[in-house]
Every structure is written in structure tokens, then in C-alpha cells.
Length: 106
Image (cartoon, rainbow, N blue to C red; front, side, top):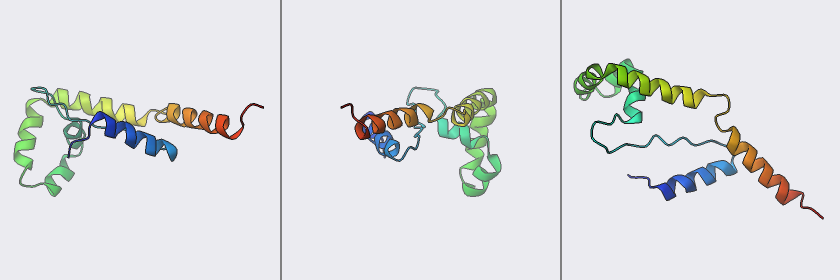
């Protein structure tokens, strides 16, 4: 199922109401692009092999052929998701909105 930009924004709005950050690992359709999810999967090869044994050989060939790119993209995603401020801007904006609504100027 495809998730369009409107769906992503709605999902972020719903998650924001619960003070949860949402990270969309979008699939890049451009030729030669490595999908973000594939880069994350490349970081846990034992799990991929165990869960998807039929797909494992082809996946391993792809990862081995572009190992440095998979590693760089995987590192970038993990760094982004593990930043201390991940979700901070969302929480700050929601808290500010709550304060302005709850404690209006008189």
C-alpha cells in the first residue's frame, strides 16, 4: 500500500496528538536508489535470512554489490532515529499549542 504525502501528514498529526514522533521510511522509485528499509535490513542479516530464507540469496547479492552504500544509508537512518532531539520539535510545538489553547490571553 502506498502512503502519499497527505497520509504521512495525517499520520504525523495523529501521532503528534500523542506526543509521538513519526519517521517515514519512504521508498525511492528512482533507478538505482536503495530503499531505506532495505538499508536497515542489511544491518541485521541473520534476522533477514531467518525470516525471509527464499529472498535471502538475492538480497545478499544486492547488499554485497553495494555494501558501502547500504552501510552509509543505514548509518544515516540510525543516526537520525537515535538523535536526542528526535521528536523534540514536535513535542515542543504540541506543548506550545496546548498552552496557548489552555491558557489563552485575557
